[in-house]
Length: 241
Ligand code: ADE
Image (cartoon, rainbow, N blue to C red; front, side):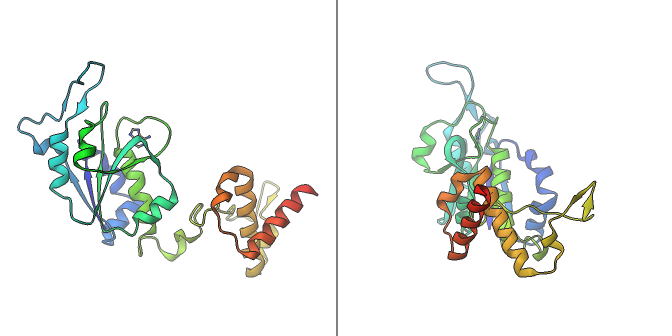
């Protein structure tokens, strides 16, 4: 997947792209990152200007951003603009974007981008949460990491994304490692029973239980199997007993 990032701060990305999943995704060729600085599309490096109508904060000018986008945009590009006004990022959006070949991620800064950019170059607006950041760069990193985890070959089998929280709409079950006994707290016996069927059942039940307890609204979008419904009934019965 070709990922083009339009940013006034290319150096922002050097740390995150040089370690962990984002480094591996690049080394394996699953993602190819191209960072474009809109300042390179100006005569005097100026990319912002005062707001019409007055008010504090500078506004990003349309032309340098448009030229930067057009320098990399392909017919099949998905153009994304990060903003707290966008749709809230979730795993379904990530799963959808994994199927694309070419992304153009526009990172705003300052007071925002001149409204006319959206008319000249329609983009999908994405927010990573109901809080205000100083720019879209950290949002871009979050999105790219979430996408990279799902691209074939990036995660080894050992830490595959299959049972990640939210990958199937539910929170994941709790996990444990050695020692089996820690300060009088033992891991659930089923996990050291060697009974794979019982372990799978326990994990699914814990996953449903956790989601019901911590994020019940997620359950509204889950497509339950018959077995899941039986587990849900078990969970509800356990709660009431
Ligand atoms: N830019 C500023 N705040 C943001 C947010 N919450 N999500 C995405 N981009 C942003």
